[in-house]
Length: 118
Length: 113
Image (tube, rainbow over all chains, first blue to last red; front, top):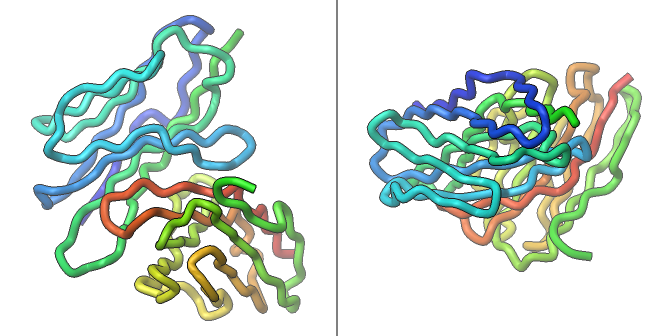
């Protein structure tokens, strides 16, 4: 079974603060992919990052950074110096690679609503 | 047009109506998906198409009927819906089926009265 847990339902921070969104996943597979998506009020999910299970290097993209730790099955997302435009719901997702299955099931967490207060 | 587009953006329909949701992707992708997003529930995968062939149907009621005439277009035909079907319906596409990121459209906000 696969499961993605985002324990933080809602977070509020003041602009310019750093914030970390937690994601913990469960899978029996050794090969899998992890994703983060942003859903602003407009509704469209915006792809942020994909990470495969064999690449544990942390990644930084501007104010965004991701910390992938297989030992704790976590894939946390940090926003540095948050801005009001970062206010959105953020989803973590897991996709496994099943030989012969053919389907890209993307298992989403329930999301974390981030509000950045000016 | 770029990315993934969906029409209409908002739809209100009665339980006896028949309507269709349309999705179009301009990314040259081979796979397309329908998701349902209800309040306080995880996104639910409804249907998956790869090269116009349905590869997954996650026990969706027959009142939802998908159609994929080509790799760029995906429809969701709706008939005799229930109020609990009110939700945001999201379309997505990806380059392939396994391990690829999915790109989403803006969604259709459906209200069933």
